Amino acid sequence: MNHLIHDSIFDSAARIPDAEALVYGAARCTYAELAASVRAMASLLLAHGLQPGERVAIYMEKRIENVIAMFGAAAAGCVFVPVNPLLKPEQVAYILGDCNVRFLVTSPERQAQLAPVLAACPDLEALLLTDGAPAAPSGLAVLHWAALNGHADDARAPHRRIDTDMAAILYTSGSTGAPKGVVLSHRNMVAGADSVATYLGLCAADRLLAVLPLSFDYGLSQLTTAFLRGATVVLMNYLFPKDIVAAVHAERITGLAAVPPLWIALSRFEWPPECTLRFITNSGGAMPTVTVAALQRALPRTEIFLMYGLTEAFRSTYLPPAELARRPGSIGHAIPNAEVLVVRPDGSLCAPDEPGELVHRGALVALGYWNDAARTAQRFRPAPCQPPGLPLPELAVWSGDTVRRDADGYLYFIGRSDEMIKVSGYRISPTEIESVLHASGLVAEVAVFGIDDTQLGQAIVAVAVADPQQVDRATLLAECRRRLPAYMVPALEHIVLRSEALPRNPNGKIDRNLLRQTIKPGR
Image (cartoon, rainbow, N blue to C red; front, side):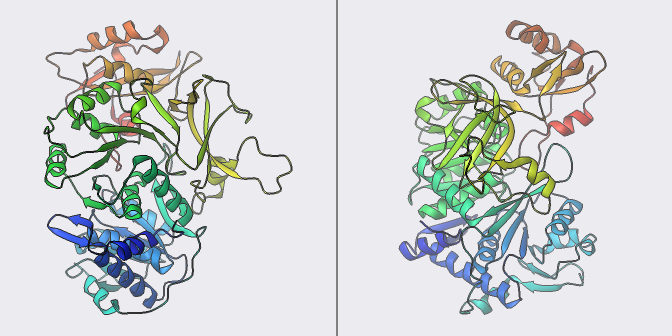
């Protein structure tokens, strides 16, 4: 198996040079062409003087240049930092400053947007623009994409790297505070790609549609798994979910990854009977069982993989498609080459069906949070149940998520510790209430969270998207009373109906924090 993440591209180019590696609109890129461009990008960075481990940020929409820049940075021995294209200039500047980015790859249009804030990034020295000219002088060295041509035959040796060295920093927003940069090694990314490609049965004939941000570990995984097996990735910046259905048909897509809000939207479309999808995957939150059932009806020949992951360990569990009917609501068992434990606060293992914290150990555990020793010490702690004489304890990721494991070893998500609602001494998972409302068939989307309450500690708020001509708050309240114990039922004034879609964060998940700030219960 490869040890460095970019080697997958070079190996596939040696095996199948003329096979399609990337598609972006009308542009097609073979593995031989991709490998040559990645080498040229690496040479350009080395010629500019970048040293081992220095950070190269990429801020643009999904396109072939984005992929070349990321993997070219890795091939040079640098660290790539993909920045979500939906972020605003101030958020981008925070990331560039936080991890001391020295080199930024972007487009002239985005460079113009960033111009007012780049002065706050003292380590930044140079820009590489995809095309055109910069909109305004930046005070930085400005290179153009055509400069890669001058490095096509450059035999400059890259910095020596090994699998435990840094490869990427992915920024993820927490429930509070500034984004944190999760540091991933080559070993993390290669082991993760191999594990996921194995249980998905990925092969060179597969064609993956990449609709998620490449700054999201789940979105980046579409590239790393495909390159490992020599498959094709079709990059897509979609406007409407229906465009995804059309792209699947046009590009003969065999694999599609999405998050629950997008799957909910896609489950409402009529998919063509000759659909080429071999498998679909879900992560980034629990997929409602009604959505799973709708997708099974719409895509009867497509396997559905439900997965759980966190950026700090990439991917932790998956549910084999054969278990969907037997274990509704399960997030499955540990992926290959990982161990997932359920533990009590004292670190001892939970009994079957006893709720506890999910702890992940193995090769996928990240290197910590960039420049944040305190938060790293909170999340990355010694793995449970280690031999007492072990001189250097193994570190595991303590997820902060509450799960339970059944007698057969399958896991069920209960809730995030920072999202649990505390009502009159009860700890309530918002996911459980959301599942009930989804199962009613009355709502298109729903988000549940807690707000401060002087008598209860917290009160439950449910925000639902529904047709006001067919559904009212009293109907949803009755459904909750029918299916839930009294302490889990939101008060009528805390049920909010709206017709527009719920807000999303940059990775496409429902933004509960924004809802908590903006929703006024009782309306």
